[in-house]
Length: 633
Image 1 (cartoon, helix red, strand yellow):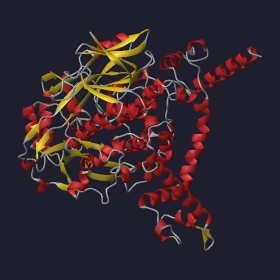
Image 2 (cartoon, helix red, strand yellow):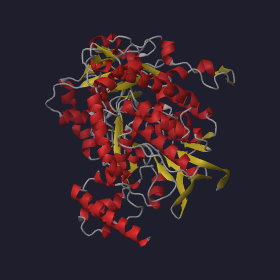
Image 3 (cartoon, one colour):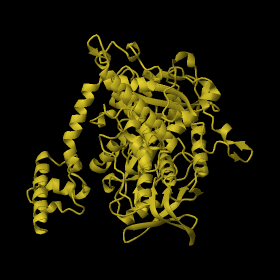
Image 4 (tube, helix red, strand yellow):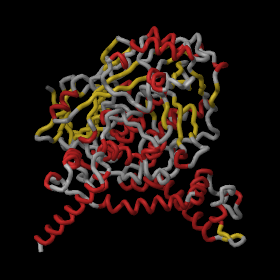
């Protein structure tokens, strides 16, 4: 065994979307970081759809960006189509989405990681977490190397004992073309973590020239493009913009694809047919999902085409999206046709779609099973409860999606860095961010299926809009040392301008009504008011209009947040013995003991804990606190 002489502050295992955000965050906060990956050519790889954002997911990406993360910037730099979804509905559910160039997205993230100060990238496979007395201190790799660190973050995605399925054919792999991590699961179990099995899948990729697009519906991007990053003006003016890398000039490399394209690429919509449904019904027994070959539970909200046909048998047709994978490839992603049926059935299945009668499959669809850790075993900081200094982030915690993974990676990276510096962890509240909702759901409620974020999961979604993520989180990002000063200054100017204009609208009157009162009317826009500020940009105007037009609803949610804050502020002592409370129901004692909530608010959200249980718990805590105070007098 070769022991590396250098001791790192943070080791990140896995370089997917969670791993990249974790490593970059920790390094940017001043830590010495090692990023270990099985394949250095697959850093930030988009294993499934090369798209970022969507309903609730787009909110998460803007939150990552507001805190100082990389996903929003990388999306803007490599996006080929941008849209704002749900614009016909209320602002709480508006959501940005971008189709990206798959290889450009991955290559830029690799490049960003390679040039990040204090971050080392090494190609090797972690096979064991090293710990003593339930305190993690390093990893052992397949090359026989031991790397030591103060903290470890595991972000293995779908690679833990990954098993690929195409019909009855099975092969080990974390995704097609990449080997699985077959040893690390045992190491996690030896630490004392309980593992389960989940499943996800991906559709076929088609060759563009074999598709008859004239039979499909074209779908264009929005103009102007709704970019993700709040720091767009700073994207091309980085501190190292004049540095040279061999014969390459970084300023030339840091050009967004949209600038090269001069236009957005369209996507297309097609539909299944009666033939599609008949093919699936006749071949259902060949699907490993229905034959019993797959034991892992799949995502309920992103079902395979087999599931769609079986569960929604009365539906005449299903919508399928044809989406380009990049500007230098003719691969087309078939969004909505995820399957694990045999290859020969996939050919007929694809050719049953409108416009795809002669389509050629470049890459077949497949399903992948993998191990995950039941997330009730981690705290809200994403540190495991059973092993100190060991953090988990991404699909290993039972989630699905690039965005959910990146959000967890960011928080794990932040908290690992803060642990190194003996600082308290950062825990985002449910009324503060979708990231807070995501993590609270995982650690409080757990999951038995791949977790996906929806706006409906957030009880304060009007407060957690995609447009105001910087107002909610950029101050925090700067305070913890992650958001750069130049970006914080941009935020501060924007915040001041919006506050001043809102104040002016409330204090300025026209014909007996304040301008704010006039703007609150549904048929009045900001630009129709008298004395508008000509220096405000469209983003500022949008936030001002939302703040005025939805003021009553926003105030109502603020009041509810204040009401519930008392529960969130009531802490439960570490190591609290819930079995000592005889008046608690047995189920409540079991659930509370297993999850070990940190606050009364978190306890109240645990499935199986009733309001009456919370009342009993509050009374008991009050009595014990009073007794403790008296004993010290």
